[in-house]
Length: 171
Image 1 (cartoon, rainbow, N blue to C red):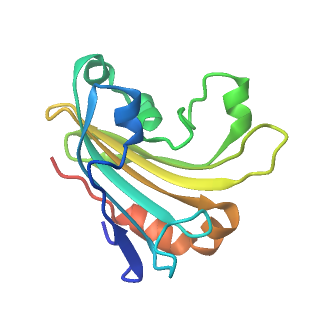
Image 2: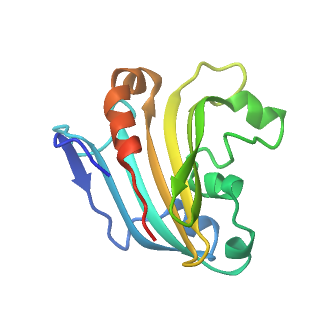
């Protein structure tokens, strides 16, 4: 993927927890990285885009049951599939703005752009571009997540789309 030059890389070490690894022992991080526009504070925040990319090796039932929906659940910052919410409570918390299948060699994948909020009565708080791809022959899940608050996403939409559209996964 092509990340703008003015974005700063963030590195992870073994003390930085991974959300998916905390949820299940059937996913192991192979590689991950993050980047955000440079800021003097040195830490990402909701007022500027944060790009997170990870590659997971899957095992057990998670590997056997992997689907486009389950891949979005695994990569989602909201903890459920924004495209196929399970109930009205989840439906009230998301709105899909764009959705498309991804065409990678021998893999299935999707990209969803959606906004989220805490509940049906709240204002929209964040917007995410979530891309996932699954390679069943290598047992690998690829996740690209870019998001920030609504105003930030709107003002950085071109850069976010450029990064998301440049994402290419090869087996």
